[in-house]
Length: 231
Image (spheres, rainbow, N blue to C red):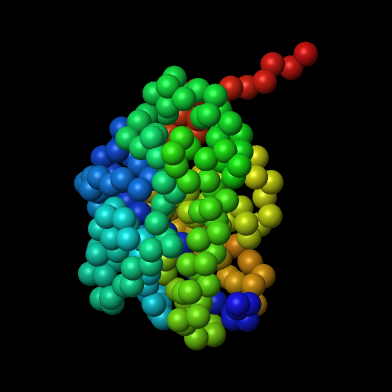
């Protein structure tokens, strides 16, 4: 069904968890928010507290729900859980660190890093499948809201990246060029399906001054990605 609405989507990544702190792939698994993660959620909620949201939605996975509960207290409004907002399922890689996956599943991991759309994690879900259900979830949300709505969606880094890659028509091999920090805010205005992206991975509400803490994942990927040797 084609959606002909003009809406503003606020896509927020959940706060940091224990496994996030340890550099483990989490996906459909869950660990609770750390103290830092709780603070990130509170600061994000406070930053968005003046927005008159028509509705608030959450992934069903615990870390997103925990983040949504914090938003609920600050914004004083209920949220709805949408199954299609859940994170990518990493299959056998869940709970493993970057280096462990690279060692145990080297070829599959390198293929996934290059093209996760056609090379899903071992026993997991492709980014193509994630994009498909994410778009279905967004369509469901749009159908539940009036024109010119501001809509809050609390979800996961992988799902947000999949949507941004789709809306901006970014080449699939550049999917990991988009970083999503914990507690980050992304703002996308959809005008009858055409996307205007005004914020990507905004974290100004989390730090008084610039911090490279949220860029740690770049170093993780740099360590494990095989770089082709140029002749």
